[in-house]
Picture (cartoon, rainbow, N blue to C red):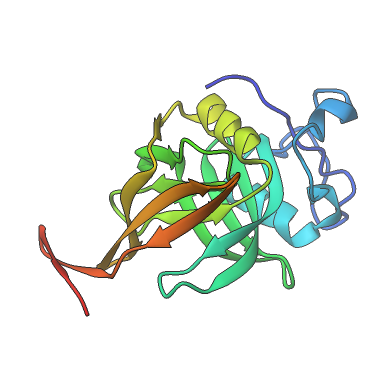
Length: 195
């Protein structure tokens, strides 16, 4: 794991600033906020969450578009720390999902210049997101845990705990489109195609 940006929680009155605080400032502020595109210091609930979980370094923070298993899109704050990936509801600053970095197997991206990526988590359902800062997200993952990064214009992902979807990327006349296949439902180690 390489060095990242440590968080200064001094703006949070609820969290005492002392030698024992797990989140301390050790670098200039401009480096702390290098890939913090949401100003996490202005989110006291998020800071409390990071303190509680023991995360010390935020490698990336930004608002992304998350796709649910049913195909709905929701805005979430994506944070990558030295220990985990967090999805936070931007309206309430509440935790929606925490994924330990050790659970991340690989990152799948298309070979096109789109904004989509899938985080493959074999022990859970996968995470499909879109962000204009896709390369920064991949860099943060590589700095944090060095997962395999796979480039392909077609791959499968677990859209839900019992549903596998295939996603295909195409470039047509200078633009790209994404095709989702019919659902495949997992039954044990097998999958069958749904209607």
